[in-house]
Length: 473
Image: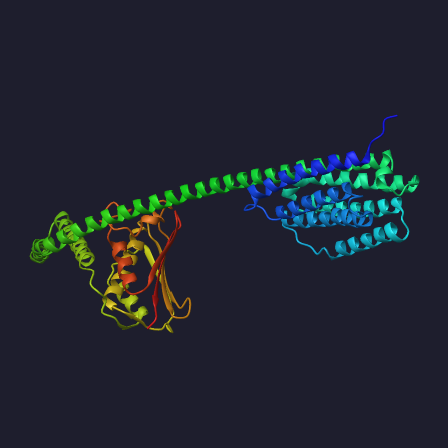
């Protein structure tokens, strides 16, 4: 009948352990900078090799020393392997209970090896200790890791599960059919088969450890690829944003160049235009005075001439004001008084109703009253022009927060479309058939020169609200 020689089994087991040690050592060398814990695996494999060598050399090495050393190295190496796995998956835990377990097992095998020799009791003690440690390793890699790591660690868990099953089978076998011999190398086919089975699962464990490391490398590469892809997308967005910013800056530069040319032109011809306009205005006034009963068409024509001359003068004044950009001459100013002065200087159509809610307890602001009056005049004129069919203009002054004064001017006019709203304060941009697009640009420039802000809220068909905020004195 065929029988398995235990010493031959141990020899080949030691040879397999040496090969596995070399493989795990190479695995550690290649990945030592990537993952923690692999060096612990190397130490475990080194201890397994030492355990098999001490076991194989029993006889040359005193039997009791061989028993204690081989089993201590086997279980101690498994504890170190568990520590390495914890570090590899990012879990840390105390191993005090396992070192206490190892101490109990060592005491048991020492007693049943020296005082009351019993191979089957030693086998049960070793198998029980190995089962407890392998079960902890299995639980760690199957349930104790993050969900995204479980597909990577599953193979190692299966290998440890196999080692747990072999340990249980060995315990049951020893209990059911205790060995009569106390000589390990004559313990019989069952023990030899268990050692072979343990060695096969040890080979499987080595393979799954290698696969686990490689899968984590692949997962890391994929994660890096996703990160690079996300960064690439963000980079594209950043490039688009920077391109828009550069385009906006270029457009602003072009507008500033145009405005500079416009300023030079306005400064050069403003006075030249005002002289003939003054002559036309005076002539119209003279004709209106000398004609006692002018023809209705003549009278209407003279009124049109006077209105158009006034409009031309306003345009020239706006051009000159925008070109000069005079620094404000600040002093304590009553905002309500300035607003009332601005309103009194504007001819309000009969179909426009003016309402005001001015806070008389409003604190004064440090401002140039002339420039501030021009701000309010421009906003009021825009509001009136936005209501060609008539409507309601509501002015309100208040203190929205400490240190600030706000004046809101709301109309019930045609409103401003969302696509035109961002460009509303740009120079030379206008939504009106008649106009050069400098009124609101000048208004914004004057408000900001006072350290304030201007904001607009508008809805097409319902009207617009301009709010000027100024710091108090």
